[in-house]
Length: 79
Image (cartoon, rainbow, N blue to C red):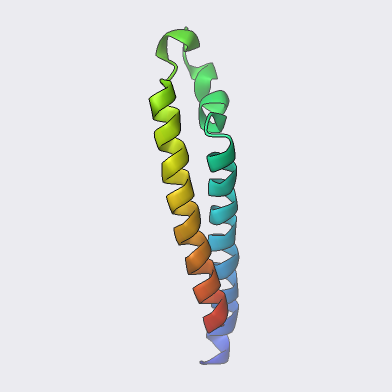
């Protein structure tokens, strides 16, 4: 691999790792995005997502975590 691509693959691996970390936090605490964005609503209790939505967010975050982590490992292995 040419030398110029080594830095790019390192940056890409780090970015994918950060995405994996964010999704790991989202999987552990799926209400995080709601807690950070509920200030935009006049009555947050009236529009709060249901438990099923938070469960679905947790499952989606675990899937995204696995995908981003695998991608980061693959890219880091290439570099």
